[in-house]
Length: 159
Ligand SMILES: C[S@@+](CC[C@H](N)C(=O)[O-])C[C@H]1O[C@@H](n2cnc3c(N)ncnc32)[C@H](O)[C@@H]1O
Image (cartoon, rainbow, N blue to C red):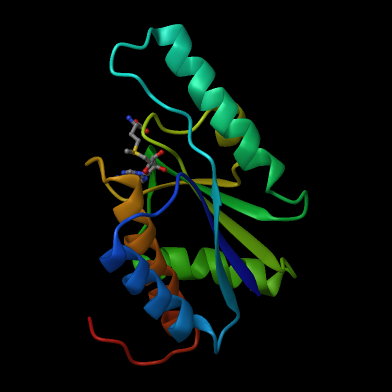
């Protein structure tokens, strides 16, 4: 199975890059964990609501252009559905059972994701009501994807 983390903006912090690379390495035995970045738009502090809307729409179009029609899409959204790690593993396992060969996890930019991106989602997934920086979110998500595969394969993993 191919798993993609699709996100807005370039990852800059070295420690985050190293952490994600480690989970990509660990994931190799289950499939490919790919990270795709789309360009972010500059977000001026004094932007109007309309300008902010235009920014998330532009970023949204770039995200949607990278998603294939057959992909199962999980968009990370603060107001989405909160799942346990076991429930996320079940969702992924369900995709495996029903022949989905690709899951795309989408992480928005600093203003979030556009309505069009949210509409493409098969699942809106929340990691709780707190806002996490989108770059850190990638690392947290990578770990949870790896954890999900350990659970699916009934393999031990520290609690
Ligand atoms: C800095 S946040 C965007 C905050 C924006 N104000 C919003 O309400 O969506 C950037 C991205 O990180 C992800 N994110 C951050 N915190 C999250 C959480 N608690 N649960 C799920 N996704 C989260 C989402 O994909 C979000 O679009």
